Image 1 (cartoon, rainbow, N blue to C red):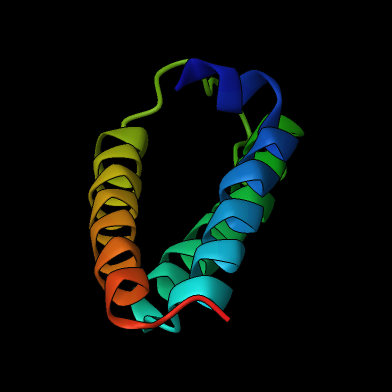
Image 2: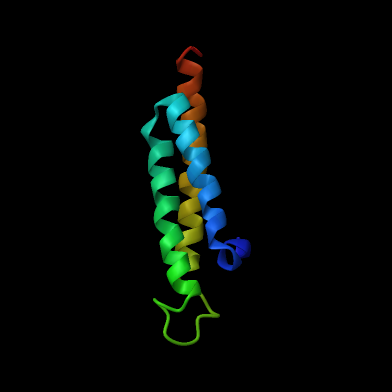
Length: 91
């Protein structure tokens, strides 16, 4: 996940994936996951450009909470989207 620290705009990839999963499944969980990823993007950009971090930002304790949260929400969103797609016929 360190790649997201170097290139925060890669966070748009999960946003797009979860938006598509929401549109296909109509489950709200992928929508919430996409929104969480969308909120992570400006936060990580602000950290990269030292807006939220005035000094030494090399030790990112915040990521010990953020990354597991994003991973868990993403996994739940994928499961719920698959369930939602199984219930709905493809049109």
